[in-house]
Length: 203
Ligand SMILES: [Fe+2]
Ligand SMILES: [Fe+2]
Image (tube, rainbow, N blue to C red; front, top):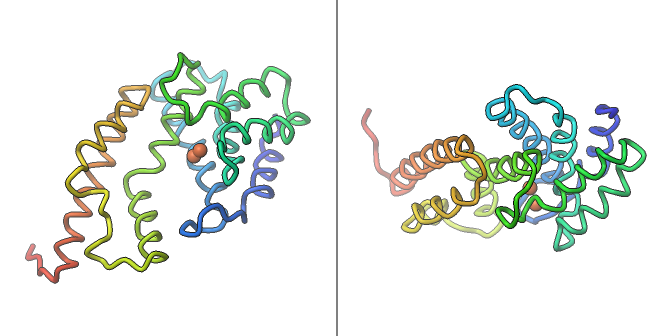
């Protein structure tokens, strides 16, 4: 596949698109770029000897949310990706990429091939940790919330939420990364809440 041309296509179609009021224009493009990078790093960690699907994983990551804005976005996205990408890849590559787009939210609903599972995990991972704090602050900005009310995700039900999200991940390596992100974000939230109440923290 001509990856430069495909990245450009992703940029042209999603780079300025606004999907949510609280998210930056082009979020879906930048998120897709990050998901592809995360999925490739997971592949190297979990299947170090098998790089045969790397291009499929990369392009699947770039376009996985191309249908965002019209729900169910994974179904609409699969149709859209098929049309957009058919001139750019072989029939076999196209089927696999469309499978990634069409199944990325349907976690643990059936047995998926590794290239789908890697993108499913990468998609979840990109939404947590410091990136989640960025989303939460943007959300607070548009909804007029006070600092004390920010980062509510890290409140009383946090551990339950984290356990539920971990159960949706496909690989133990992803769970490990997720837990590290969750611990980092919680530590940040706890510090933030203390400072939001005016507490002086002495080193
Ligand atoms: Fe999605
Ligand atoms: Fe996504």
